[in-house]
Image (cartoon, rainbow over the protein chains, first blue to last red):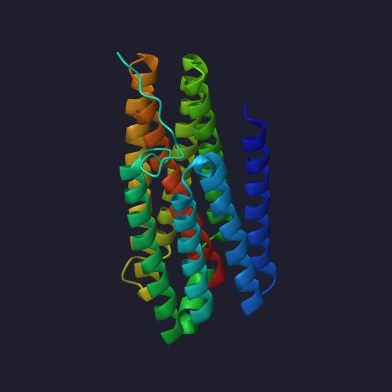
Length: 80
Length: 191
């Protein structure tokens, strides 16, 4: 098995537990919401670059997915 | 048969194929727009959305996230094994991948059953309309993904599957992860 992917999975599981913990124990402050979205974005990028191997792709695809994520998180943070 | 070496650095050949990536972006934009619309709606009646969100089981959501992520890990491993011509291991890891998807569907069914029994159906309020539509469409994607993986399993066992097909199937399966990684925090954690 690919060791890098194993470490990625471990990190993804830890981040999932941390986001759920943050949400359950630290209320609905704006900075907590932003932290949860930020950690979720890191998970999203780990899946895209490591599991989907987009790190080997043309920069256009990397730029597009990062732009999408910034727009999504940015818009939600502004609205909330 | 003449084999063609694909350069992933070429803009036309991202892993999984350009058509699959166009589909992935369209899906992400559609779900993303729906989630932004959900958040905009929540501003009109924040108390109802907050109380409704608290009625969702975040532990179920987190467990389902772990099921999908683990399944995604085994999907990536399947592709790796297939590329090294280790078809037996690829087949085994693909089975584990599908098992992760089935676990997701089982837990989702339990969650749906509990919600229906508690009376939180699609017409209960705006939040639950979003909840049922967004998670329902995502479940349809997971089911379609499982059907694709089932065909891929047959292809790997009979050694007729091509690497392009395996890559494209894997990209579709990972797309289900990506959509869930947007749905989970927005629906279950932040409103």
